[in-house]
Figure (tube, rainbow, N blue to C red):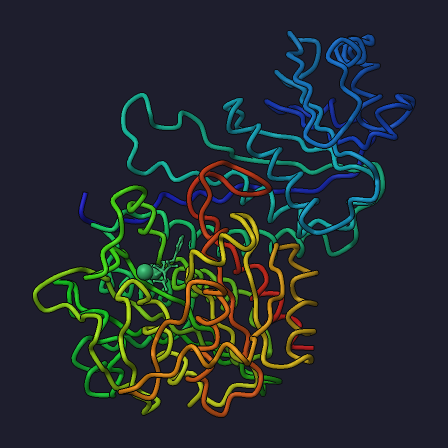
Length: 508
Ligand code: BES
Ligand code: MN
Ligand code: ZN
């Protein structure tokens, strides 16, 4: 199990069809979404139609199970041959105000999760009134909900069935560009799933070189440029901080530069940066054993860069996009960097090392300085950076910081479009005091309190002349221990959807 071989990726065949009788379509499973309002009425809609076709049995079951269409409620009905489908599942959607992208995506994800659980190959998803205009988001959700990381399971543990085809139905007409929306949704869903796959790989398989190889592979397949700087090149170019963090590992560090240039003149140039610590032991300041395995996800920011570019290369926006992956493995070793060390950086500033477990901000510092030299209109980094951020916001929200109001507004607009959960936090100037060092230009960590903020302030020292910068601390939601929204257990790809929305909005 040492090769990073690719998954057999069989795209799901997705169609959209207008009908008021979705239960008449031949499929293994029919999933019907209902608002509480329409669940109460029972006179119209896909739910009522299926109930009528079953002689009222669905309604009886609903009454018995006290199903009223509340969010998270679910009704499963085996049709015993009374309908073409083996099973009808009704999913509660709650009140009708849930129009956010996240709610729509989550509904479709619930449907594909049900399909996997039922081992259904063919699925019909009856979309509630009003959501027939949101085909792209529905398709994203279906693709993301269907995701599982099962490549290392064998025998009985191997999933027995894959979803082959899904038909989305609605009573109202789908928009004329539904086919295009389906394609977009699949591309985007695939991009996020590529990021998840890389992050879910174990750390004996994914280390800086193999992560770079994966980027090269995806670049060839999807048509974006990939340049890899190895250990020697990193040192030669003066990226001493990435080099320092990588010293303790037998797997040397890499800086990977992915790029996409549109055929017509670009409207904007965006630079994204991702933290790529393929495993974070903490180094000499070693972490406790409990839960250390989760630190295989410490390269989620870098994995997001690959996923993002896969989608960008397919969307072909009129925007120049660069994505940088700062990759190293943080290990304790006779050659490892230590607390007390002073290292230079690409930016020129010297840094006093305080705690080798604060390695993320070091590799990012050099990558940000490299990104700044590309003179972007906006630079956005994402990193599983601090436990402090998880304490502040919990495991399902990340933090973002911005250098000015305009940039903050643009990023917030992208967030609204994506439906991802990120909260704005302040770059508190007065805490900069904490990063003063006696013997170098900067200390690399501050006090315990406000740890996510001081990490952001440290990074800000390396963005050079970049005016519009956003820093995302994704330590919480980059991975999850339990499935929620459109995520399975493990890596989520949190961030990709928002970055993509930002790219799309920059093309306008
Ligand atoms: N990768 C960790 C942060 C992290 C914690 C990610 C929990 C995901 C879940 C990071 O490299 C780290 O170790 N940060 C330290 C910084 C501290 C030493 C200043 C932390 O947060 O404890
Ligand atoms: Mn660390
Ligand atoms: Zn880390």
